[in-house]
Length: 158
Ligand SMILES: [Zn+2]
Image 1 (cartoon, rainbow, N blue to C red):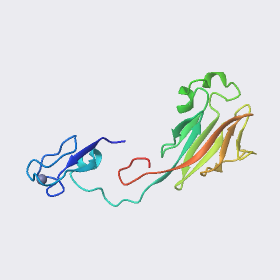
Image 2: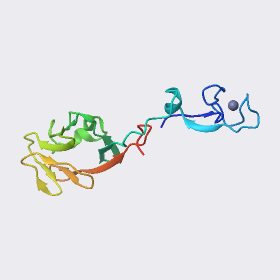
Image 3: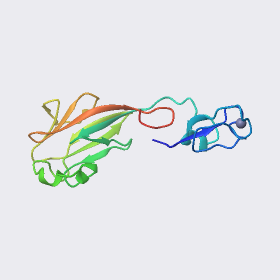
Image 4: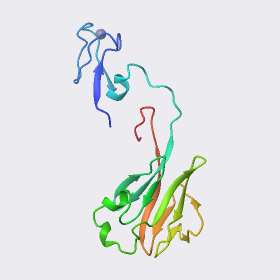
């Protein structure tokens, strides 16, 4: 999360902002407002952009973000490789599956893994669309929960 700064609501661009709450140095009666630094540094209010929706994978208590360009899933490939304990999960192939975007959706395909890829219990033989709420399973019992994540207008996960 971006750090919070405090700025004057009367003249946000002109009055000095601070890193702690208090009153404006120019307008002593005006209480400073807390804002996120990410919004402040651009010098303008964030555009009313459509909040983007994306998916994450919850795995061994961690949230693994799926970047827009997709991600490789494997014991020695992609973000899973750096999860502690991953090296022992030998039923997961070095490169097991790939998640990739197509027409604004995310799909998963098996990469000829030894122990196969399953989506909600069904073996993935052709690319399958990935959606929040599904369970992606690698081999017998290595499960990743597919979760939705929504970004706020600051581009931060909410
Ligand atoms: Zn002020």
